[in-house]
Image 1 (cartoon, rainbow, N blue to C red):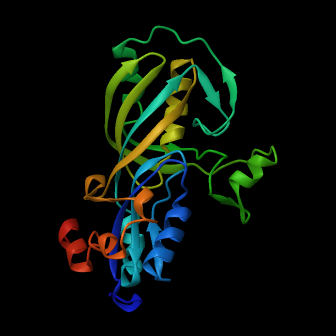
Image 2: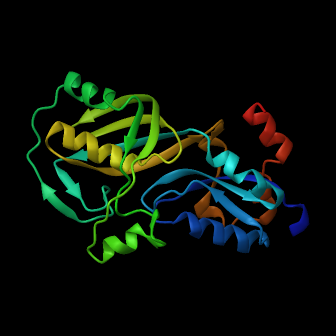
Image 3: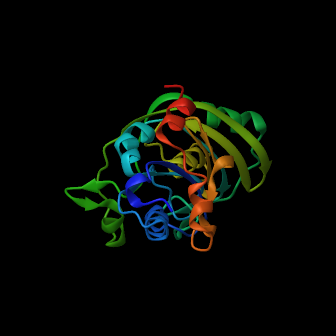
Length: 240
């Protein structure tokens, strides 16, 4: 059996909805019997999809992996604005949804292609004076947030079924997809929130090769480790 000292690499996980990224790390730490473990890029509890876990010496390239571009598919719901900008929050405003033509929707999405500054949501783990913004939000406080420089490489409107719309977006690190949905809804005049989200890629890593998070507790340890990518494998996948 492999020991803690030789579990080095990257383990792609397909996170289930309702779990936090920390939950996944805690379960993997316990099941694999390793203390040196981290993750690359937090996924909100609502979101599913690719979460890269770094183990052992793999933690040394965690920042490198986190800096890579991400791909998501998601659904936004028009006509409802929530305090968290996604369906986990409370609806704070409802607006009528006008007839939205494909041309008007495409223009709203295209506005955000390329470089722009995005204001992070209040319900986030970003800290202000050492306190996470979501904790301030729970106290009913709203503080000024520093805009983040982000980039959208590509977008695609997948399906329109009012009041919902499915989309795909390829973006830089630090990008908030729920803020993207919120801002597009505002631009269209009807408001919107993110109702579902799935991360499909991170850099050159694909969720299709990931181990299901909801099987971590029950799967044999060796079955999980069979999905572990060694550091040379990671380097080859990245083209480094």
